[in-house]
Image (cartoon, rainbow, N blue to C red):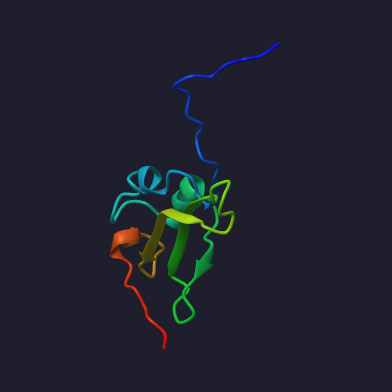
Length: 110
């Protein structure tokens, strides 16, 4: 039996790392109201904490599409979001910042 597919496009496979829908979940965090326990309930444990300050937490969301059938190594970065949350001495969120792919600076090496 032969199947003919016309006008059919396959979606490219996407590899993800981190927390899905980080931007949507970060909207649930309210400044000066949400505490550390609430953040863990919403986002889970932080991926990393600041070296200098235990009250700054970081969460990541990265999505990469796999290469084409011709170039397997040709990956494309679709999303690269980083959420930085800082807490006051009582564990209440006093600042949060979501950095997207376009906010990142390009660093060139020589």
